[in-house]
Amino acid sequence: PQPRIGILTSRTFESYVAILATLWIGGTYVPLNPLHPEKRLTEIIDQDKAQWLVCVEALICPAHRQNVLTTEGDKTQEG
Image (cartoon, rainbow, N blue to C red; front, side, top):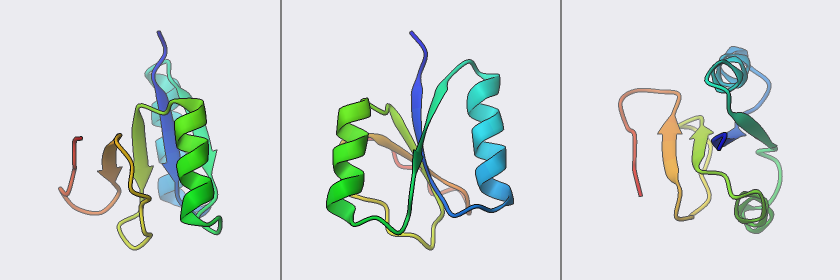
């Protein structure tokens, strides 16, 4: 099955790279708006069953059970 990858970034160069990388590996990206409250983001992630979450280090990533990749540094967290 295709991996579902949540992308929690504002519209920057990194967000376009994350979208293209997701499509390149044959995955489906789930766009997440960083302006939404954490509860809403968690609901979207759970509903869409996103297996990974890509977020910018400066943004607060919602607490969830998924794997997290940040766009800044080597702070990859796997849950």
